[in-house]
Structures are given as C-alpha cells and as structure tokens.
Image 1 (spheres, rainbow, N blue to C red):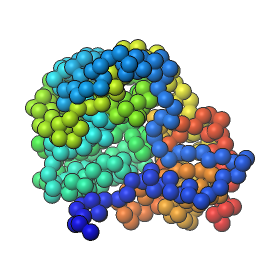
Image 2: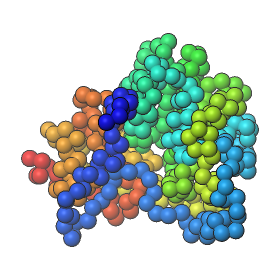
Image 3: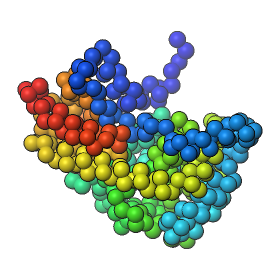
Image 4: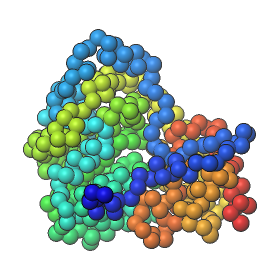
Length: 394
C-alpha cells in the first residue's frame, strides 16, 4: 500500500457519517419511526420560487455551466457587501468579499492563509468538529478553550492560553454545537485580544439568520480597522436550503483574499455557479420567506427547550439556532448512550465526545441534538422517548 499521510490518518472520522452507521441492521418499529437529530442541515429543498428560478438559470443562462471568477461572481460579492454593511452598520466593500464552495471551505481557506504546521488556533470546547478536523489535517494544534456554564468561551482563559504560536481564535455564533449566542461585548473582547496579540478572530456566523434577536450581532465592522483582525464566515446552506450547491462567503481584507485566491483556484477553480446565482436571487427575493423560516426555527427551539427541561435529571446547557446541548443523568458515557438510543428509542443524536478532546470527562455526559428538522409535534415525541430512557439504561 502506498504511504498514508500521518496527519490524515490521525484525524477523526466524520462524526455524522459514523453516527449513520449506528443505523445499520436496526429495524425501527412501525409505530416508532426514527427521529434524526444528528445533522444540522436542512432536509427540505429550497422554496418553490427559488427552484423555479434555478431551473431557468440552468436552462437559459449558459454561463451557469462555465467557470467563473475564482473569488466569486461580482454581483453576489457586491450584494453581500452592501447588505452586510447595512446589517452590521459598517463599511464592507465588494473586494472584501470572497465566495467559497460552502462555509467549511471558507474556514479551511482562512486557516490556510493564517497558519502553517506547528502553529496553533484556539477553539472553544465543545467545538465544531469539522474545524478541529481541518486543523488536524493541516498539522495545526487546536488549543482547547474552556466555556462557562452558559456555554460562553472564557476570554480570560483565552488570554492565558495564547502563545507565540497562536495565530487565531475561531468562534461560531450562534454556536454549533451548543446553540449559545455570544453577546456583542464578548465577541468584541475576543477581537481586541486577537488584535493585541497580532492574530485573527475567525468568526463563523453560519446560523446568524436564526438568532433569537434581530439586533446587530456585533459592532466589529463599525471599526475602520476591522480588516486587521476580523475574518467573517457565512453559509447560504441554512438560509436558503442550498446545502447541495455549496455556497458560502468569507469577508476579510483584500490582501488576505489575494492569498486566498491561490488556495481556491487550486482546489475548486471557482465556486459553483448555480449556487452563487441562487444565493443572489435569494438575497433579492426571499427576505420575507427567510424571516418566516427564522420564526419557525424559534418555535422549534422553544419546543425543544420545553421538552428537554422537563426531563428529570437532564440539564439543558444551551439551546438556540439549530441546536440543543444537554447533559444526561446516566452512568454511561454518551458515546455508548447514543448508539443505544438508536436501538431502544429510535433517536439519532451525537455524543459530546465528538465535540471535545479525548478524555474530556464533561463530554461523556453531554449530547448534541440538531432539532431544526423536527417539527414541534415531533419534539414533543422526543421528550416522551427520552423520558423512558432511564428504564432501558438501568
């Protein structure tokens, strides 16, 4: 067998794919269908109006099928620049915007422009596993950053953990996996810390459109010097259900994007044209639809919180956007409990051990539930099934 890159070999397997393997050979009772809470991605297609527009893009617009600019369609970059400027109260120019093949590629590209093997990046624990996986693949150390009981990253701990090898701190808000929404003052504190140490704040706001508040999530873009520190990431997978069309965005200084262009040209040449055109159409036409989607997600959040809060011995650690993060009361690691929940209760969710360093004791008591694809009635059923877990665990 040809040699295998040890960085790849040491990187954990994709957690969602691993969880799906727990379904193999399990027959769900006819009266107890599977409730899948494992993945934070829309399972429904884009709204009908967008699909009709996409069909016309495929049929009538020849450039949909051709290579485009490496950093994305100028019209989409301009649209994002002025809409984000209005939303954040800052000044963002089209040349500050790059379009990527999904937000994971935006993160990967940002990290590649920042760090090399042997460098380090601070990641709050519990972390988004794909962020940790990319750092491992690149030979970059992920420094675990503790969170408090509200699942907010500890700024003082970040200052203490920052070393000369640290190139950035990466935050996700609203958070994956916990659902926690970071206060503007806390985000500003991390930006100030990163700037003072000559590093970057990589801020992933994939779930911004489903936050509990419609207020500005932070004021970082109002600082004329934001380009010196901030790298902002976004995804259209959640907002317009474009998961399969891989469309994300990265906002950073033009100098950094010039370096990012080298990476993107080598990996994808250009972001998918259909996804970009669809995102642009969505920004211009789906504002009311997205507002209604947000309200529905908030209804499901409330239903999830109510169901989980009523469970004796369980503790809700975070709940927001697409996720609930909970602590279970049983004397069994979550990595063993989750496959058991598939067999005994037809529930598929992810253990906290997939979001934390090996040996993390707290993670053994924690679970992530991606509730956004489950209706309010189904979340009530979730509570009923979890209420019966104690008898099965023993």
